[in-house]
Length: 368
Ligand code: F6P
Image (cartoon, rainbow, N blue to C red; front, side, top):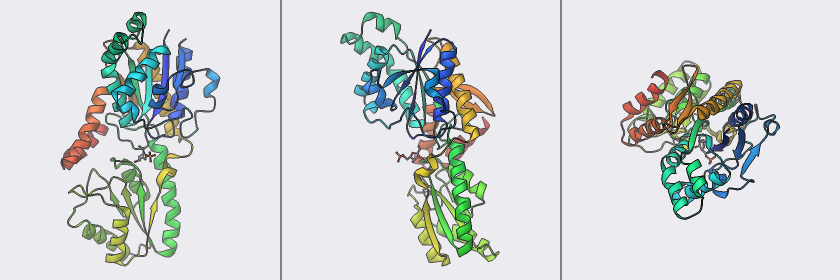
């Protein structure tokens, strides 16, 4: 029977707790021991029973709906260095863990993939320096790792949705519905900055859900020469038709086609200067990550947690590490390494100004 550990990493996302609950209980159901690595990769670096904690069925009671992550998370700088990963490897072996399930976003899963790839050399170094015994070396030759994607950004390739993205979308849409009332009353324009890092999914979906006047996302950058003219033309037409409020949604990663960032302040200044609109900026910030998980995130996280444990139990040393995804409403396993590669391709297409490619790569996440 296996010793299966689960951790949450990167920005917290509603549904992470549901994922932890599902992993812990499915592992126990199958007669395995379940562990939580506390504080994300930081917990691997610290090690010991305080940070790699055995969990019982009752320990995850109430986790299903709760927002955030009760087992803690971190953006660990130390784990980005080999020295940190070496400590992580040692502590996992000391705790007897033979499979690790990581619930996190693209950065965290890229880290997981690197850890997996480096494992043979890490464990070799630990043996050569007598930090682990020969038995431990033989028993832990392969790191069985599995990703479940938890992030509000929905920025991971090969999965239609990440755990948490629909809860965050719901928070944003609710906030914009509130803003609508005051915007309409004062006949004002509001520029709303939403999260998403380099991904425009939250901004785009929130824009469609609230019939925003204009949306700015990194994958379809505005023209550096005349984005102001284009936006004001559209907003001006809506106003001419009698619309009393204006909503412009700006993704935090919004850029122009020469890769200059566009801020909510830039957009506000333009609406004031060109159209004379009384304009306010609202940066929704971390409120987007808070609150209970919506039902979509609860079931997605639960089904993915169950599948992650099944994947771990079925993995042989030759099976590529899986990422548990949802594709066309089915829970599926994808090779982690490919998902990480494809996610990187979107970022590099944007960096090299190949926006058509970036869009088609994002698109293929939904259609492939
Ligand atoms: O990745 C999730 C996210 O909320 C992004 O949308 C945002 O850019 C970032 O995390 C904010 O990070 P932090 O919480 O560390 O400020």
